[in-house]
Amino acid sequence: MASTLFRTIQIHPFLLYPTALFRTRNVVLYCTQKSTQTQTATQEKQQPSKVKVSQYTQSKTLDKITRDYEAIIGIETHVQLSTLTKAFCSCPYNYGSQPNTSICPICMGLPGALPVLNSKVIEFAVKLGLALNCKLSLNSKFDRKQYFYPDLPKGYQISQFDIPIATGGYIDLDLPLEFGGCHRKFGITRVHMEEDAGKLVHSGNGDYSQVDLNRAGVPLLEIVSEPDMRTGIEAAEYAAELQRVVRYLGVSNGNMQEGSLRCDVNVSIRPVGQLEFGTKVEIKNLNSFSSINRAIDFEISRQALLHSQGQGDQIVQETRLWEEGAQKTVTMRKKEGLSDYRYFPEPDLPEVILTQEYVDSIHNSLPELPEMKRHRYEKMGLSMQDVLFLANDMNVAEYFDATISSGADIKLAANWIMGDIAAFMKNEKLSIKEIKLAPQELAELIAFIKGGTISGKIGKEILFELLAKGGTVKGLIEEKDLVQIVDPVEIGKMVDKVLSENPKQLEQYRRGKTKLQGFFAGQVMKLSKGKANPGTLNKILLEKLNAKS
Image 1 (tube, rainbow, N blue to C red):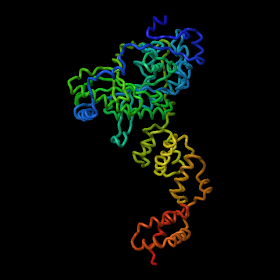
Image 2: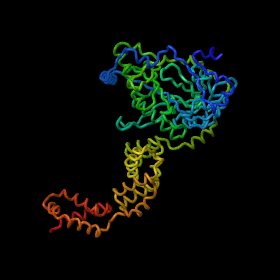
Image 3: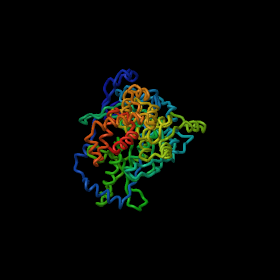
Image 4: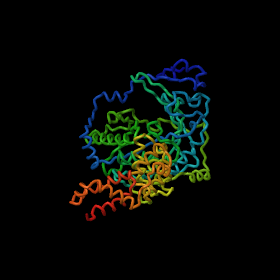
């Protein structure tokens, strides 16, 4: 029966025994798919390319596009939700766990196994819909999306078709300064709930593929944008802002390397001034924001080059893969139309009905989102560079807020976090949650420096010790006797000592070699072990250097 229904799949004999279906945590199940004659990205790479785009030609073509063509870009983003269990069963999902160790009859699509909706999926969908300024559907439903693929054991995916849970929203973002620093708004067509498929693990030689169903049934939210983006940079920044939003909301970790946030980009071009869209091409296998940017730029240049050569009819609606090594897109498959999926309402799940009270309670619980936080930081007087850095990571923003709420100067707190603390985290490969310096201690350190208790140089020395080992600023200052010397009499005595010990340099200074002031200041700081107040020191030193013999 297995060979009749799944002719391209080989199933190991032990999978046919009933015990293997239920003792899934004690065994590792694999099924393998033999390679077919379908052309792969590797095979295409081996064939001579019909259109060769050199680096010089690509740059030249992109310049021409700026003048003659307009790119139309939209993105479909799949966000994997951080629920404890899957969408329709009680199986947990942990990234990186052994294959087929987190599955059940529902995940495997066995006959008679009925789904039960995880209520957290609805809560997270409502949260994201509200955060993206969407209109929520108080009455929505699930649908079956029919297609066959080896990692989809049911032969269909539970999704939403004509009545998604959220529609008609938008997202605001600020482009980085190096790309213009302007404010942009991109439309959101819809947000809908669905389940993920399993995963195919391909063999090194390409002879077979292994099926891991751990991911099957994991809840997803798909966010479909309006075709409002015009450059690869805009698309990459849109995806990065979505990542920030889902992380701020706590609905997903948004890690692209784990597949928790996956972007499929749709690209077409049209002559400037033309209203009708060109032929849309979808690009997959984009696992970073930089690859989104580069893949779009390549695809725009590829399509423009075909148009310029009179081969625009060769641009067909298809799915292409981004090959990171070759830095190009290659054909994967022809795109299926909506009719191929044969949607119909999911008979095993009831409608999703939301009350206004439920929606209002979630709305009232929303945190401050990235765009709101950026506006608040701007009003504090921070530069756009500071604002974008601090608001980019929710944990960094929380640390900054906690520091200034403890009384720290706003600009100084931003400078310390963006400078020495960020450098320490980068060198030690730590997140801001892993450093030992509490925000309250950073505020106290800034206050001690600003108040003259310690110098900025000593402050830096203390900072790195506190970051690595923890403790309190006050305790460390007392322990190491680091309190700054501000008494003019005491500093004057140290200046006199240095001048008397360096008569030759003193004479040279008084003959016009005034750069030696730095030498004398350094000697006094050395004598005071770095504790002399720099302002007081320089004032007294100048007076004594310029005094008549």
